[in-house]
Amino acid sequence: MTVIEFTPNRSAYITAHAWMAAIAMVAGMVILWAVGNPHVWTGAIGGLGAIGLRGWYMMSEELAVVWRIQDGVLSGPAERRVPLDQIAAVKTMGSYVQVITKGGDKHLIKYQSSPSTTVAALNHAIERPVA
Image (cartoon, rainbow, N blue to C red; front, side, top):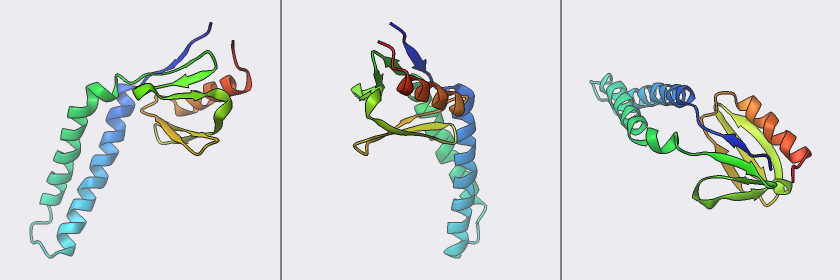
């Protein structure tokens, strides 16, 4: 019985949060500028603080999530189970891999160090199920 695991990568997690922080900083500054606040620069501090705090708080939980392929099923957190023959599409979104089922459900395998490798492994498992 072959088991394939997809674990999150700490570096990918930090990189994703750095991008989110940059976007939040710009958004905060634009909002303050639009409402006429003379202290536009505080939007950058607020955006950085919000995403930094979120990243620190959620890191241990997010980096503990493991997705597995075993016995023809992709299983993940919160007892998610997707039979491989029910997967309609697999796509990358930054460091995430999105799995879309034939029923329209969507699942994210987050913070992959090489999303293209994860997609290739998923597609290989879908094409050649292992009993």
